Image 1 (cartoon, helix red, strand yellow):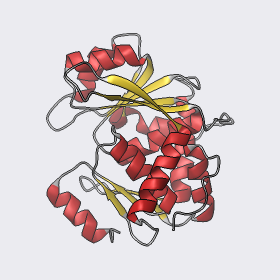
Image 2 (cartoon, rainbow, N blue to C red):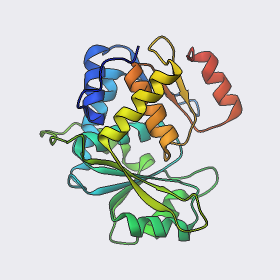
Image 3 (cartoon, rainbow, N blue to C red):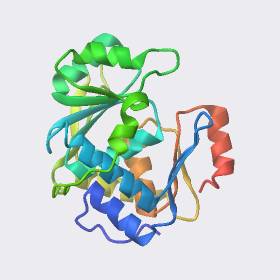
Image 4 (cartoon, one colour):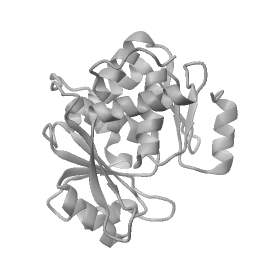
Length: 252
């Protein structure tokens, strides 16, 4: 079960502990577009550490990294990588229009952005680059992912559980979105509570089509599955694909 005690974990600590305890169990599955990504927990940790070192070449610990993409396995790896690097992740709704996206970019104080080339028929990377201007580096999964995965030397920083892990922009009103800070501890205990409440265990997969730019996707789903040491199946919501994943992956 998920009861392993609420130790003073950061998000990165929780990933390391899970990889140590369940190295060969499937940790991440992204069954999309015939190009399935499937990693064990130890492979997930290894890729996240590689990307973390790469991110530290464009962001310092404590700086803000934007992530603008639909659900994809690489996005989950970036979430863990930012946490391991002590970089604050700012997950952004990829459906925001140019003015809305520009507002978030300006108010979040981003040092770099990672995005996808497209979302549906929309040239997402073009829209993100326009919002970022010339001063903010923009990395595109389709062009830059292999480079981010390349192993690098160097130690990762020590990260405090009280440090900010993410800034999530939320509305809930007719005004502009508000940036809400979420600490590592806040993510860890919320994910634990969710997994415990629904009885999620490592015996079945957690199929997660909830948006990864929102707490439901990247805290309840991602961190909840980690606490339960359960396979995390992440995909954009599509009714047929979701039902297929539930069947194929033995959903809990």
